[in-house]
Length: 302
Image (tube, rainbow, N blue to C red):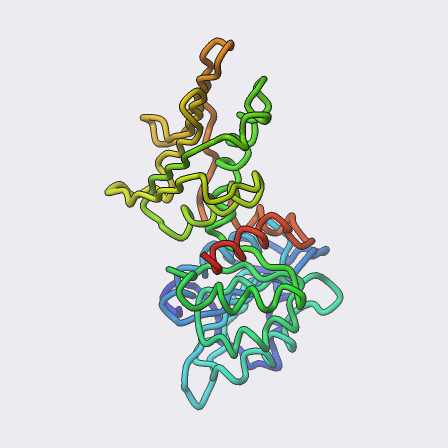
């Protein structure tokens, strides 16, 4: 992580004083009012990728940002850079103690979980007001464990956050005349995308929201392109709804064919999918997300 930051080494005891120092290179002064602590936890390689988004949030979002890379070193290296505290080489069994020591205990704490042993997550959850999951293929081991902890804190997942625009646009199709009433008679759902975890969450959200039974054929197709979701098609012999990436790859196009209605379509911006934007979206949410929890349970049980 060190190479990703222009930071000063400090002792653990001097973290607070280092955060209060004015940045001589930029002239920036520490924000007077902070709103939350966001802590990225994970293996070193994944925390490196998190350092810059965290630093940007610290500079612009009024949050205390902490990056913790686990390791087996006998000494933990502590660095401070423009509002970001980076801890490297910390042994996993001490990660929860580090979070407890540096977080702003009077303000919400959001843990950005980028991987690691689930027993470490168990301990960190006790300190978090919200946990945002962000690992590859979480359905294999992580999601089954997380559903057992829903009563301990609020959870989300960046796979789910990336679906915000997709879910909103799909839901709006059901506002068209006749669509909501016909939803129980739908026979198919086809999702194409490069990220199977994201596709599974989207399918589970539709299945649980519309209370579909086994009469709906759900098909997830792996895409050779790089977008987590490429297209969503659902309906029956008489109704066809579709949400897909437009040719620009920056917009989403929706279309609907409904009996007795003129065919409709529109194109809407997908919005920023950067880590900074996704995390900023999660920072605005403090409560439990019932729709996410239902979808995740369905993914785990399928």
